[in-house]
Amino acid sequence: MLELFDTNPIILAILALVIPFVGSLIIGPKLIAILRAMKAGQPIRTSCRGVLAPEHSSKVGTPTMGGLMLIGLVLLTSLLVCDLTDPRVQSCLIVTSITAFLGFLDDYAKITKKSTDGVSGWFKIALQFVAAVGCSFYLYFACPQVCNILVPFYGPLNIGWLFIPLAILVIIGTSNAVNLTDGLDGLASGCMIIAAITFAHIAGDLSLFALTIVSACAGFLWFNCNPARVFMGDTGSLSLGGALGTIAVCTCSELLLVIIGGVFVAEALSVMIQVAWFKYTRRKYGEGRRFFRMAPIHHHFEKAGLSETQVCIRFWIVAGILAFVGLGLFFSCLYH
Image 1 (cartoon, rainbow, N blue to C red):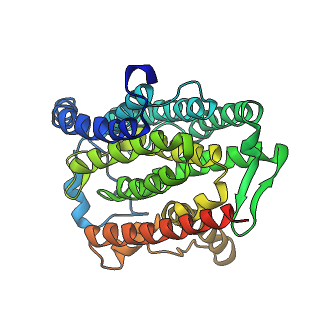
Image 2: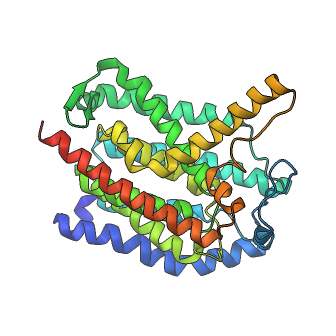
């Protein structure tokens, strides 16, 4: 739909930044009011296996599914400013839409059950797998250049058909990693802004799509900063992760994503380590022990005495540093 606007890239970039943010400021209060009226409150984890800090009790009843606004504005703006004939743009939009739908189903199940248990884990993985497989095969045949992954200090490396399993792993892994990061007010949206800004510098034709994510997350953060008036829910976190993973796959930046999205990687690894350590110690000692005070790792630092705001800001700082490192590694690829 580029013909609807001046195709000057500067104009398109401005639109990509302005439309989602302004749209969020307009839609946000109305959506929050509707979600409150529907009693679409976020269930808070309170089981004895992982009780959150007492201050989290105040979050009970805070509306969730704010990701409907966030992702809705990303998709709408992308349809207006992005080149819809580009297979990479198409892949980003399709994966984002499918993972948003999955997140909506999960949020809806949690709200109706009044429980933190949404749809089954197997169903989540299955639908993510379908989206990732479809995207990977489509890109492999429609854009063969995506098989040239960027290796820091080396340059492009053609991995052929191995691109497909790698892309599937990256898309599914990133979707779930961002979902795990979404546990504190503003944490996931703030880290996503930093990662998306970085990819906007390296994504070429996908830069406009990355900019819509930056703007939509900034608009959402307006209402999600501590104390949050709304949560993005799985509708937002699963789809943002899916979008970020797909951008990395489309730009041959799978390895760089490990650095640029380092906070998301650390969050996912902390859960994996916690689960593995618990199972190992249960077999060895007869009772499971924890490696971290609580996982994902942002809750570990809360348990260590840091406030929610301190954890968020420090994670944002780390995310910013990692983004600069990732950008530097990207340029190292260009000069080889």
